Amino acid sequence: MTLTVRQFACLFDNYGFVIRDEASGLTACIDTPDADAVLAELAAAGWGLDFIFNTHWHPDHAGGNAKVKAATGASIVGPAEVTKIAPLDRRVAGGDIVDLGETRFAVIDAGGHTLGHIAYYSAADHVAFVGDTLFALGCGRLFEGTPAQMWASLQRLAALPDDTRVYCAHEYTAANARFALSVDDDPTLKARAEDIFAARRRGEATVPTSIGVEKATNPFLRAPRLAGKPGAPDFEAFATLRAAKDGFKG
Ligand code: ZN
Ligand code: FE
Image (tube, rainbow, N blue to C red; front, side, top):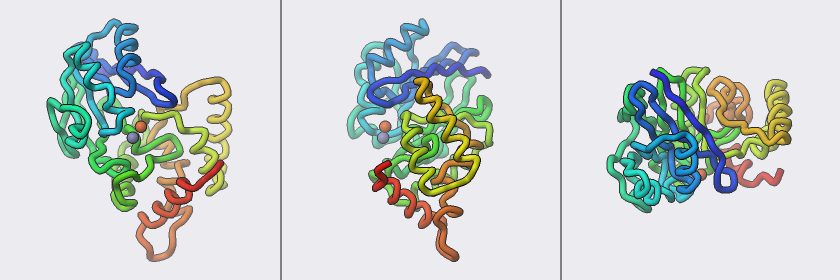
């Protein structure tokens, strides 16, 4: 049970991922932010493509589906909402299992950024592909869902083992760090933010992150501690922080 992950930058600040189950040789890409970039990465790896796994319907995630499928014959798996912009071969939702050879992904309901957003988690490989739900030091904007829905989704991800590698779909980390520092003076966060700013000055990716690191430093996962009110539900603290981030000019 070995899963190889190749991560590549594309569009303005997206990350694409092509993955291979080494036992079977079966391959997949997580979303299709830029069809040409996905196809170039596959060519560089010398891989064909068996599946497209979509996380949500946004064009920088499913917009390349048609071109990638036409070029490779890949079968498209994703949440029903993707059919707003492209056909699916298989619809999945939270609780379903998606197998890639011997690699078994649990589909996790990650709604909030979009209503039907999902994440793909392999317990054996300690990896989660979370799309635009959880970012390094951040989380996705609430374009469609409610704060309560997004908070529940983030809690499902936070419940994964600490050593789970988290592959998020954008390099938003430096901007997220500036907001995090504006609401939290935790020393662990400060040290991480310095590492992030230095990595970005060197042009290095800050993705993947891990569940353990995010639980310790991500302000949205720490919302009850940072913005909670006695007796109020935790998602209200989350909503307060999410609204502050939406208006943050850092
Ligand atoms: Zn999105
Ligand atoms: Fe996106």
